[in-house]
Amino acid sequence: EIVLTQSPGTLSLSPGARATLSCRASQSVSSHYLAWYQQKPGQAPRLLIYGTSTRASGIPDRFSGSGSGTDFTLTISRLESEDFAVYYCQQSGSSPWTFGQGTKVEIK
Amino acid sequence: QVQLVQSGAEVKKPGSSVKVSCKASGGTFTKFAISWVRQAPGQGLEYVGRIITIIDVTDYAPKFQGRVTITADKSTSTSYMELSGLTSEDTAIFYCAEDAGISWGQGTLVTVSS
Image (cartoon, rainbow over all chains, first blue to last red; front, side, top):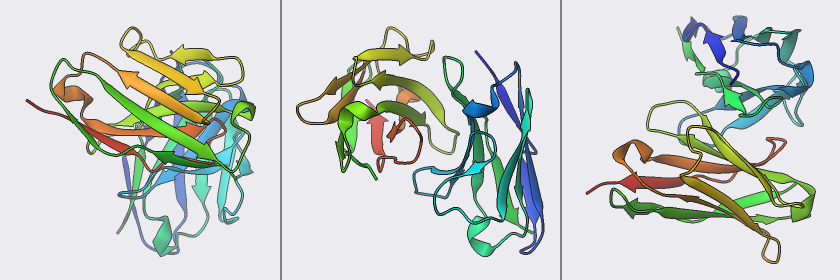
C-alpha cells in the first residue's frame, strides 16, 4: 500500500501568510490520482484539489496544488480566517486508496 | 450535484456488527462509485473500501478485509457498509462519499461500548 506522509504536522501562521503543505508518497503516484481535502471540526471533508492541481468547483484561487511522482504540495497563497483547518492528501491510483495523516493549519 | 444522507448514530456491543446506510439523491446512482471512510475520535481519515455500483465490484482496505461488506441497492440508490467483530477501536465516524470526492455524507457515529 502507498503510504502518504504529510509535513509539517502543524503549521502555525498568521492570517495573510502563505502556507505550504507537503505530501510525500512511498511510491510514485499518478498525478491524475492525487487530491487534497480540507476538514473543519464537526464537518465532513471538503474536496479542494483533484488531479494534483485542479481546483474543485467553488474553491478560491488562493488554493493551488502542484507536484509529481512522490512529492506533492498544497499552497494557500494568503491565509484567510476560514482556512484554519486540517488538510489531508489522498491517492486513489493504487488500491487501497490512502490518506496522509493530515496537517493542521492553526492561527499563530 | 449528488447528495448523500447517512443513517443515524449507533451504539453497539463489542463483538457485534453494525450496518450503516448511505442514500444518494440528485444523480444517477449507477454513474458513480461509493467509498467509505472511517475517522476515529481526534484522528485522521482512513479508507475502508468502495463499491462500483454499476457492476457491484468492491475493493476493501486490507485492514478491514474479512470484516467489512459494502453493498449497493440500485432500486433505492442506497449503499450499505456492514462491519463485524466490533471492538472499542472501531468507535468512529463513518463517512460515505461519491467516488470523485465532491459529495460526502454527513457521517455516522458508531460507538462500541460494553
